[in-house]
Image (cartoon, rainbow, N blue to C red):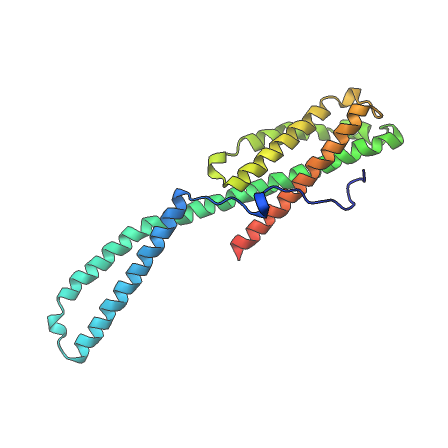
Length: 223
């Protein structure tokens, strides 16, 4: 088993490398708003064209009916705006959640790296320059608030892929904390402890992959 910093194999989070699709209410509203906007533009273009034709033939005085059409356009615009506004609000909320997940994933990645490196190298110095400083600096105490932050994220506001990421992060964080609770009696050469160090490395890899996926998704959204 190599220490962190060497090559690592990517783990699979999504089936066939693709994020499961979904059809949320916000997406339906986005689709409806797009059709409303296009309808508004098409109707406006038609009315403008009629005004041009009527003006060319000098019969603008007969175009009083166009005022009614203008009123219809105003109604269509007023109806489309709430859909557009709601869709935009939902998009911003989704982006904020992605950023929060990215922040937590990055924090978990770093904390897992630190804990793994500490335990992996403890067999070299018997914990004198690794395990003891880890406990004295209180780095193990960063796990409870991190776990609480993960638990506070509402999964109903996430897409299926993000729900899976969050679940993996919760499992990894809970496992790391269970190790931290036993650090005072940690058996450096214990068989169980060696297996748990390998599991820590796995959860670190998962955290790295989660960070990469969330960054890619953010870049795609920005593009």
